[in-house]
Length: 294
Length: 311
View (cartoon, rainbow over the protein chains, first blue to last red):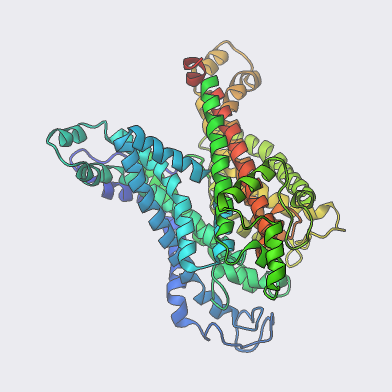
């Protein structure tokens, strides 16, 4: 809503991809989002190098606030809250990034194949999709974690699989619009193999919804990774991880609020930032309000 | 349209069956078998054998699945490992608490969200609309449990100390405030956005213009002509959000120590109480599928193209 996007001058036919980012950047919200998310990413990446202690060092009594030599006091075991906060971000970012990336990649492949091949391939893929969609994301993750145990690769795999059908649906729609175009028909007419058509003709033309999906899935991934840690089903102690930190320290929230407030605020700012960027991208891609799928 | 609904129902049933298969298969992947889990590590081989006979663990997996499924269909969800009570009986009270929590949240969230959405549409591109749009975007992006914790830090014992942050059996009604508020905030944003988008579309339509040209009072145009036509798509989103609640309550119940199915699930996972985990996952997935189905049917019924074309 912040200003109508002025159309680019007809003399400069920019490529669509650069155009998307450039258009998105014109929205104030994209800039705010980049600033917010950038701040948290910076903390997560630089944090371990500037932390005053090591994450497993005991420096205070449990839940002691204002202990000597600490800024925010000690956590449930008496470890430095600031240190664990500075160390706990990169695991969240890495897991969320990996699961969103994998899920979007797999969903894109399925979506393009289903949209391009149509017929029974489409039917089989989309019905399987529907079954996968029938599982609430978090419940599926909890079921698997409780059976096999909380392992890092499993967290990534489960979240990626739960993203896959949602991405596939969107990309399939986009693909079906693209294959109506003449250049795809031309490519078919000169006998390009199907795989090449999907990779060279279709994929570059669905990048706009693809990027929007990536942003959306990244935001949800951050939430799911954090909530798994919070439920004790993500990374395990003594890892310093924001979700786990909230779980470990929530009993004493009234006495030592910092150990919960710091990671919670960081997660909130990060997700808001990521979603603002996504919103900017989606506005740039379609020019209207994003849909309502949760 | 009846055919479309029938197809939807069929796929709903198929999905539910697939989910039951997944849930059963997942518990088969557990290390050790059920007898081992019940009796613990230092059980004698004789007692293990006896219990295996009793639980039909010597039968092939397919037969075990059929027996389990038969039980589930008849409402027999097995016996909990940790407290030796029938799962169905044990779950009655948590299910009731969870449904009450979800119902209250929906009751709080839906009218407010509809109102905010409609008002945004009427005040399109003005101050209220902009702040509502930004507000829903921000709230929608933050994970629910984080919203809950922020509310606790703000209004709970550590902050303004208005409401208790932990549910207790003997506590008063004020302990419902924070969980309900958290869930309502999680559910509302998509409803607001959909209501706004639909309302704008309807207000720009020709029949609303016509009603205005007839000289009808604005109030009457809104309530008699615009609002009823916005209900369809919005109702679908409301149903989808209710479906989301079925899974979303887990983290919130865990956070507030609320005695519902979510907390039962977390405790059961902790105790490796397989029948209980199976039952709760199946229950939540079942509600989720059912409400999604309702949402689909509403969507179909609200779409005039479908309604007319497939009669």
